[in-house]
Image (cartoon, rainbow, N blue to C red; front, top):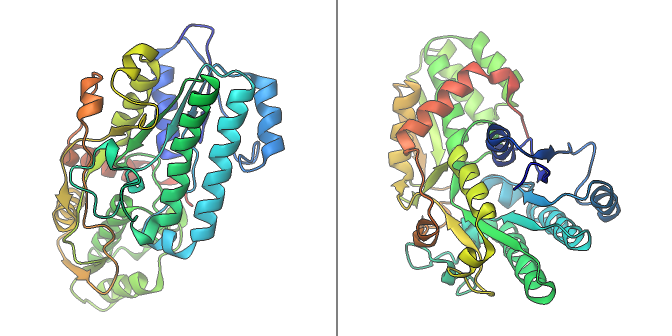
Length: 356
C-alpha cells in the first residue's frame, strides 16, 4: 500500500468492515472509499459497475454480506444465498474488469463440512456435507472463494480469501431475532440483570436502541421485574457444542496483514485450488462455558436454562490456524478480555449501535 492507494471497503458499517476502516485510518497513507447501502446496492450489477468505473480502487476488502445466527439462517435461507452470491459476484467481477491490484474476500468457517476433522484445515473444504442450518450461506461463501481462485487462474488476478472463525466486537448486531451467539448472550444477560434490578425503564430504552424483545423473553423479564420471579434466561440448544471466537479488531489486523503480504510469500503457503486462509485463535470453548463467561462479565446472578429442543448446529468448529501462523500473524485478544471490552462498549454506546 502506498500513499496514493485507493482502498474500497465494502460493508464499512458492519462489524468487520468498520474495524478494517479503523485500522487502515490508524496506519494512514491511503484514500479509503466507502459507500452506504442507500448509496450503492451491491446486489445491483449495473450500480456496482458504474461505481468501479468511476472510482477505480487499487485494493478492495469485501466485508459486505448478509449474516445472522441459526434462527436467521433457518428463517431466511433464500435471502442468505441470493444476496451473498450477488454481492460477491458483482464485486469480484467488477474488480477484475477495472484492474484492481489486490482484493480480499471474507468468508466464514461454516464453509467446512459439519463433521470435518478437528481442527478444520483448509483442505477440509468440499470433503463432506455442510451443516444444514446454514447451508445456503455456506454455499454462497464457498462460491466466493472459488470466484477468487477462478479469476486468479484464468486472468492472473491477485484475489485472496480469508475464512474467519466466529467473530465478536463493537458494531455487532444485537437484534435478538437474527444476531450471533455472543451479542445475543450479552443482550439477554444484560436485560435479565436490568429486570433483577426492577429497572423496566432501562429495558425499554435498550429495546429502542437494539430492536424488539421477543415475546418469550419479554415475559421472562416481566415476571422478574414485576412479579418478583427469580431471574432466568433461556438459551438455545444443549450448551454442549464447542465454538471458537475471534475479537473483530484482531480479524481486521489479520485481513490487512494478509492483503499486504507479497504475492510470492503467500503462494508459498497456498495452492491455486486451496488458496483460502483460516483466521482464528486455535482455541474453543463449549457454549455452556461461554455462557458462564458472559454471565460473569455482565454481572448477572440468575439462572441459565438451556432449551435442548432447539438446534445446536455443528458439534464443533475449531479452525486449524497453522497456515496464518506460518505467514506471521497470531491473535492477540483472549476471549475473557474481549468480552469485557465488548460489554463495556455495549453499555456506553447503545445509541450508536446498528440494528438489523
